Image (cartoon, rainbow, N blue to C red; front, side, top):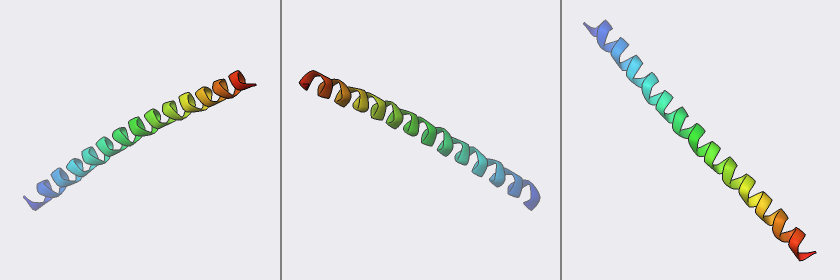
Length: 50
């Protein structure tokens, strides 16, 4: 049975890795959106001041 345990451990690790990457992608996406909003907002504020 050690072989079966090894396979289960491997699949569990890949699921955790996938979850990590999904979370990482979501955080990256959110940060990118915030960055774009911030960039547009600063550009808009500067254009108002001129």
